Image 1 (cartoon, rainbow, N blue to C red):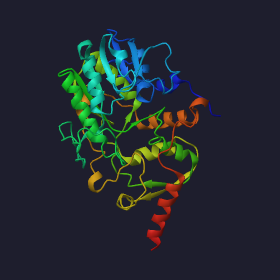
Image 2: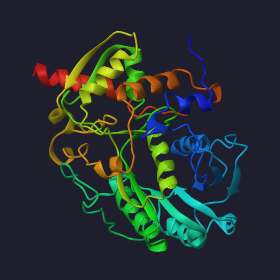
Image 3: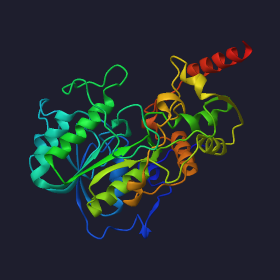
Image 4: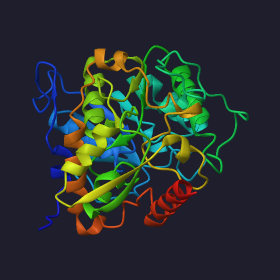
Length: 368
């Protein structure tokens, strides 16, 4: 029987422990935190984590994404673009200990928010991305790896194939730094996964295994894989506010290298449904047009270093990771038991048609 899970049940599944004490314990000093966003995926996880610690929150957003969430929390409505409607005027008053910006994609808009808030906040946390680095990803790259640079610094679109995404994130980092020098925290997550994820990237795998049958799996079991559970990231962001930690951090895990095979095994064990695996070599997958398996990246060529980033700086600053087996099980439970009004919000990042096509191509190549 599938049981619909409440918002709080989704985000509190198996709460992790931070060093020294349960994260659920109240913080020593309550903080005032402004979240630019707050109702998508990472935002709600931050809200839940901060409230468990006794902090006071304000949310700024357009009021369009799940407006029924967190009705008890103060909200400021507006648009990240100061040129649209009332823009960011609702943020012209108020003081906060920290801002967590998880909805900034364009440097002009991040700069406008950071400049407006700079006199009235102590810390600005900007959620960037591991994609901010110049491609191709090096093996074992750290936070000093060269950043992506936009061909057109004024561009305000991601591009047909999201080719501007990394450069835009890097430029947003610079905009925040310029407005609050010495008071910024730049967080560069890899794939953010777990319950409530609407992207269908990581969710595809436990959900696919739950269906059973022949499953196309790319690469090799020994390929590296990195990700971050949304709840671990959210709890760590709150810890960064409490400690007023600044600097630049790669936020992805786990703390020790993890293999793709471990993730696949976790997906198999999370469901009683029988399945058979057809492993398709990364070299073959990398040459296939129109086939882009979610989460995994070919451990060959330009993408070989994609899942090998160093995270020691974040771990030293308190980032902790729950086992991927727990993330898999919780994600599947959430997906199976989504609230009725949330059905359809998650769109799988890989379709049955794509899977059938790659299986067809692989078997044809072997027969030839």
